[in-house]
Structure formats: C-alpha cells, structure tokens
Length: 250
Ligand SMILES: Nc1nc2c(ncn2[C@@H]2O[C@H](COP(=O)(O)OP(=O)(O)OP(=O)(O)O)[C@@H](O)[C@H]2O)c(=O)[nH]1
Ligand SMILES: [Mg+2]
Image: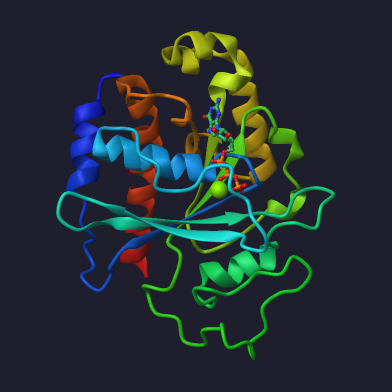
C-alpha cells in the first residue's frame, strides 16, 4: 500500500466524470468541530499541488457558519471534484448541523449561503430551499471525519442509516493517537490501537471496515511527504470511485 503513489496520483489527476452533465463530484465532509475537515481539504490540495497550501482555514470555526465549499484548482481549471464541509452536532452541545439538515443538503435541497440553525431544520418555504435539485446540486459521497483521539465523542445523532449515497470515513490525527505512527507513518497498519479505533468507528457508523481510511493531515509540515501523500490518496481514490459509481447508477 505504500508503493503506489505515482499511479494513484495519476489516476486522480486524470479523473473525469463519465456523465458529461456532472460538473463536479460533490464530496461532503461532516464531523465534529476540530476533527480535521479543513485540514483534510488542505492536505488534498497540498498533495495535488506538490507543496503545502492553505486553501481552507484551519482552526477557524466562527460565528454561525457551519459549512464551507472548497473547489481545488488544477493546472488549467478546477478539478472535477469538490468538498463541502459541515460541522456536525456534538454530544452535549447546541453547535453544529443536525442530521435532518445534512440529509436535506445531501439531496440538494439546501442552496449555498443558507445559515444552518442547530435548533431547527430547513423548511420547504425557506427561500434557500431548492425544490428541484439537479444532479449538480446533490451530494455524491458522504465522508465522516473523526479524529483518532476522540472517536467515542461522536454523537449517535451522526448515524445516517440507510441513505442512498456511498458513505466512507476518515480517521484523522493518527499521529496524535499512536506514538509508533508519529515515529513512522508506515506503521499505521501495524498499530493495534488504531485498528481498534477503526473497528469502533465502523460499528458506530455501521459502515464496513474497508470504507474507513486512516489519514495524517498536513498540519505543521513545511514540505509534502510521500508517505503522508500515500495515505491521503488511499482515502481520496475510493471517494472519487464511489461517487462516480453512484452518478452512473442514478
Ligand atoms: N497532529 C495532527 N493534527 C491535526 C491533524 N488534522 C488536523 N489537525 C489539527 O487539528 C486542529 C483542527 O483541525 P481543522 O482542520 O481546523 O478541523 P475542522 O474539522 O475543520 O474544524 P472546524 O472547522 O472547527 O469544524 C488543527 O489545529 C489542525 O492543525 C492530523 O492529522 N494530525
Ligand atoms: Mg474547518
């Protein structure tokens, strides 16, 4: 798994949606504040640019905005996949976006600029409610972002049960959670504690273990690194593939 960087990177760079109506695959990252959503977007951007970039603001939870849109610029134009990040409701707090609203957003009913309210869900009368979503308004892949040191803080609210789009998860901050991984990221698949976290997450979210990807985000690095890139690609490729599969099934 640590030898395919060039091949996987090429695959991602060459990706074009089969369906010509699709402008971009929309990948929704949701997870608690501080779980590493913005850092993941930056990490993908850094991977693609080959240098550390800061496209999304890290540590920037501010005011009432619980969502952000991120398109990634390629050599000529934008890549045909984009990330939306949504702060999920957390245990014991009133901050974040509830599951019902996230479901509405996934179906394409929530227009850009809508201010999510943790205490109420969007109604069909709201002017930000899109009554007739098209393929391009919908979310095509749902990714749960959880930090390896806080898996158990995830609220049961985050359960989506049966939804008609592919669901994956990334486990971030694996360097923080495991000393062996901090020392050498290649130890990731040997770590018993991380394996346990991934199993916990799999049970909690009811998604199979092979849909959960350990990631170390770029957060303090000055240069990109092949091993970090490899894990990011291991997570990114299945996101693209499962989104592409979904669109072709619709
Ligand atoms: N050690 C380590 N730190 C990380 C990693 N990913 C993110 N961080 C740090 O965790 C903190 C939170 O990361 P963000 O990317 O801002 O998290 P977020 O999910 O976007 O948070 P909100 O926007 O508040 O919802 C930052 O200080 C990051 O530098 C990681 O893989 N390893
Ligand atoms: Mg963020």
